[in-house]
Image (cartoon, rainbow, N blue to C red; front, side):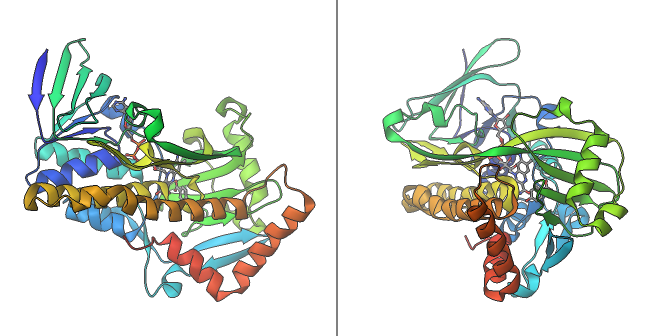
Length: 394
Ligand code: RFL
Ligand code: PHB
């Protein structure tokens, strides 16, 4: 069996794992990253589009911010559409000048891979049967297999589980040492990417009796749209034409009338789920990002929560290796979870506000409408929305 030794093994080559490996490398901390899929597979995923300030700062600190700063768009607000009206949430005005960056997760992941290549980062793709061992003690190790079936072992000080919701890290923690909290929603989002001019230069979150819709974008020539669909639907049920027709119905007529349509480049359905696992540490294994928590995408929090985990973990590992101080590692789970739960609350609230819940009673439907009326008429309520959307402090 081929053997390697490193300081930190990172499982998962999504944004969380790549960002951490790059940040640690710049501080002289050695890591090995194991990714289950090929790079092309990882880069074919279309996911998040809205980055909060803390994330963009981490990308810059990682030396990966130049294309993002050139091609990403700063957004100072977004719209909530309802009953043929569009109300603007002035993020910047309500938060003392704070903004978000619209830059796709796919591009950001590409930038992180390029940065790892440039520094000869130890990133192994198509790593099969990745298995953490001895994680309760001080000398953990991992075993895995390469594409030729050859067995490998990596010894390390710490293992970071950044392998997403379906990864192996969380599952490696004994059941009686981890508690999970979960909420599922009775619908999913059908997303379409198209090479068309976006319906609006700023995002539109639309509440409609037929269901939620979102107009988002990757650039002024690349649009990303979503519609709420029943969980029983599959992508095959939705031709491009059916998608555009349904999207139009859920948007105010002026927006629908000007909507540019075209062939979909990507089309997928994501179920909506809220999930938290705690604590986010067991022995020498630390969980980060989607491996530990999931939110419905309505508040654009998922990737941003992953980034705040990486911020805490990066500083904690630096303190350990560079100062011999373990307080950051010991408090990691509590600090990360305090922020994670706020993102959970916000994402649940945005989801509850804007979607059609098929089982809601007339009373609950009234409350939902009243919540929206209150939000749009109260500066205090809009400020609460804005400060959560641009990202709470780390
Ligand atoms: P990822 O991106 O899932 O990466 C985990 C990686 O681990 C690999 N892996 C393994 N590797 C080795 N061995 C194993 N056994 C493994 N098992 C899995 C996987 O192949 C993968 O490469 O998790 P990470 O890095 O924590 O990043 C999290 C984000 O991807 C996620 O939170 C966001 O995409 C959520 N999200 C959004 N977040 C935002 O902040 N703003 C948004 O606007 C936003 N929009 C979205 C979203 C997620 C969506 N979907 C599809 C769920 C929109 C959508 C539609
Ligand atoms: C996206 O552009 O993919 C996107 C934007 C905002 C969200 C969710 C997804 O809340």
